[in-house]
Amino acid sequence: MAYELAVDQKVCVRPLLRQVVDRSTGETAVVALPCGATRESVCPSCADKARRLRIQQCAEGWHREDEPEVESTELGDGGADADTHDGSEDDQASVRRVRSTRRRQDAADLPRVQMEDRTVGRVFQAPDGRRYRPSMFVTLTLPSYGKIKSNGAPVDPGTYNYRRAALDALHFAKLVDRFWQNLRRCSGYKVQYFAAVEPQKRLAPHLHAAVRGAIPREIIRQVARATYVQVWWPQFDQAIYVDRLPVWDGSDYVDPDTGELLPTWDGALSALTDEDRAAHVMRLGNRLDIAGIIAPSADADRAVRYLTKYLAKSIASTYSASDGFDPDYEAHIDRLHEELRFLPCSEHCANWLRYGIQPKDAVPALRPGACGSKAHDRENLGVGGRRVLVSRQWSGKTLGEHRADRATVVREALLNAGIVAPEIERLAASVTLTDGEPRFVWQDTKADEATYARVILESVEERARWRQQYEAAKSRSAILVGAGGGPSG
Image (cartoon, rainbow, N blue to C red; front, side, top):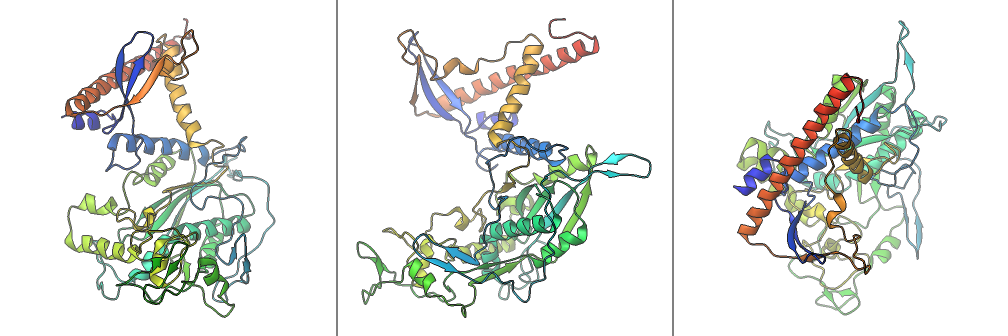
C-alpha cells in the first residue's frame, strides 16, 4: 500500500534511509533521501522527476537568442564541441600509431565553409516584417539489418544481421559524435543540440535531437550520407577461446595449454598495417527526419515532450512492456543480448580474451561474457552510455544548476506569498554547536517493512503539505499581481 501510494503521489519508493542524531536535544530521527534513479523500473517517482528536469533543460537552451555566458562542462556521450578522432587515429602514451585520415572512397564528400563564432541561429524576416529565429528537430537512424515484422522482430531471425546490429549499438555514440563534428564544419557555426538516444521497435538505437538554429535540409542530408566511423581494433571475427579460457600467470594472460603469452592490447594494435581493414565500419541509415520549429509554439512544446518521452525506460523495455508479453519479440531481445555478451565493448573489455588478446590494463579474474560494462546488460542492449547528450553551450548551465533553479522558483513563490519555505539546512552537517562540533550526526540504518511503510507515509504527508503551500502561494501571488500589489501589499 505504501509503495502504491508513493508512486501515486510522486514520492521516492526506494529511499535511502539514514538515522540522524541531534546532539543538542538527543533526539533521533529516520530521514528518507530520494534514490535519484532515472529508470521507471527502479523508481517511477525519481525517474519522472529526472525526466521533468531534462524537459526544462531542453526547453531553456533550444531557442536562445543570446550566447550562453558560461560554458557548461557537463557532456553526454559524444557531446564534445572540440573535434575528436573516430578511431582513424589511435594514440597511446607509449606508442603513437597514426592511420591515414584520407576519407573512404565510398563516402560522399563534405563541403567546408567558413566558421562563425556563434551558437544561436540566424534571424529571418517575413514579407510582412515579422522577425523569427527558427530551430530544428532532427532524427537520425541506423541502417537495416534485415526485414522486420510489425512487432519489431525479424521476419527471418536466421538471416538477420545480429552481429552488425550489436556492433552498431556499441559504437553508436562515436557515430553521433562524428555527425555533429561534420555538421558544424558544414553549417558554418557552432551547432548546439540536446539529444536523446532511444530504441526503435526493432531495438536499433536512434537519435532525436533539438538543434538550435536553422540549417538547410540538403546540408543535413549530405552530412548524414557522408558520416561514417571506422573502428581500428584488432580483428575479432573468430573466437579462439570458447570451452577453455586463458589463465592469469601473475602478470599476464597465457594460453591454458602451452603457457604462451597472449598478445597485449598495445602489441595487437602495433601489429596492424595499412593494408589491414578496419574491424568495423558503420554509417547512418537512409531514413532522416527534419522539421523546422519556431518557439514559443505548441509544436515546440510537443517536440520537447516527444524527445524526452522514453528517457525513463530501458532500451529493452521501451516497447515490450507497453505491448505486453510477446514471445517472438522477447526472443529477438534475447538473441541480440546473446550477441552483445561476447563482443568487445572497449579496449578494456574482458571479451578480448575470447579472441586471444589481452585487454588494455588487464587484471586477474577477467572472464569473457562477464564484462562489467552496462552496454552488455539485457536492459541496455549495447547502449551503455548516457541516454541524454547535451552540447557544451546548450544552456550555459549544468544539470545541477537547472535543478537548483527549479528549487529557487518554489522557494521564491512561497516567500512572496509570506510563507516560510522548509528549512533546507535543518539537518545539515554544516550546522554546528557552540563547541564547533556538528549538531547533527548521520548514520546508516536498516529498516524493516514497518519502518519503511512509516517513512513512506510521512514522506507522502510532507509532500502533500508542501504542495498545498505552493499552490496557495501561487494563488496569493496571482491575486497580488492582479491587484497591483507586491509581496508586502
